[in-house]
Length: 297
Image (cartoon, rainbow, N blue to C red; front, top):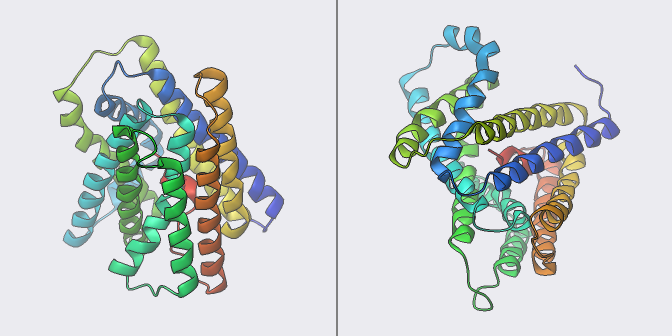
């Protein structure tokens, strides 16, 4: 077991954040020529290459009918969430996607109350309300025209929250390797008919970009596990704020996206609420709220 090291945990979480920001930047670079469902399908199809070391573990796994149903349900939910995320990336700035993605742990907290019987103390209720206010600061309904991409991101965060809770249930019964691998397989299968319905033949350059999307996503999840092994989530969670900084910088420098102080403010409010919820769970010695990078594709 690795010795606890906050410094090492923070370092690996920074690397993880860079990887996930790289994912968003590459998907943005890809543009909208290839439909969102197809881009998502190709990302997951290419990503299956990274599952090859897990083949033996999967072959030895025997799931119950209930576990298969949970895996299938998670695959369906995550499939729709991923498709919506890719769609949002073609519609709204990187900084808004990143900031709204911070809502995912808040959704998880609410869903855990409904489906897992978690208790919701007054302080956690106040944190959830603060996070929702942060979302309103970002969206500013009534003060600007909302894009379909905004609604897609709201749906993405909710669906990823459901996916996370299903993974939490499964991880108590099945190894993490199997849970991760089956998600990749089921999402690839789920996206296939959606991709074929709108298929556009990708160029070699587009396939190369999608390969690096899969590579960065895989590397991000791996370095995130290293961060969790090195330090408590209460130490690593605040570091995810840097993702918003990098997203704003990338959007401004490479995609001519204006720096929006409302988005930054809303993102800070949401992240502060998430950090508070995470800290309270640590004090109460239970883990429900996921770290923000865990919500990525």
